[in-house]
Length: 275
Ligand code: KMH
Ligand code: ZN
Picture (cartoon, rainbow, N blue to C red):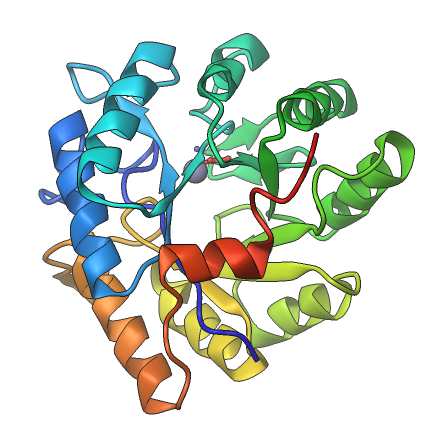
């Protein structure tokens, strides 16, 4: 079993400062947050950014500023979001790819998302996938519903690979989509093709059940204020790094060290794809 890759979804598009006062929103705050998370054992940062009013944006310039701030302080793998926020157009969502990030998220199917719909039809996901292929940006297949795995596999079959392996992220517990029950994660992991790597995240109250199931299965873990703002029921986490620290400690106690960013790059075989 390889070392544990902890990904931090530290910002998100839906979490507000009112819900989590420690939410990083400026480039400087995001840079400092990523560095503290890396010190605590994280090796990847799933990046969303905000505008001057702390509203979600996919603006290229806002991503560039946040990426520069992260890079000033840490070598953590940066995975930009192409999900953006509800209601954004495909062109808006695609902007961070212009900055050639190492990785980007890619959801391969439409899903209910609370009272909204996270829209990803075949044309959109194909465009996003091919854009990533062309630029050599590794997708993380962000799966909210089981059929989205089939769609991702179909993209690879029809359009060829986007790297030496497929990296999956099972996002469980979004209201309206698949819940974080252990059997759901076991079902999805069982369908992962040979040679893939996978991580998962539990939304809200599913954070710890999904995390513990992932550790038991030997997978990787994503966490952070995009997905969950609490440390214990009703008790807000002080910062993203506090959530990282708990999972890193649990894993080490079990005999599995956390991966450094460079070790995670090797595990994910990043940078080895010629395009
Ligand atoms: N904000 C959600 C609608 C992603 O980053 O790729 C979608 C999301 C997924 O966060
Ligand atoms: Zn996201």
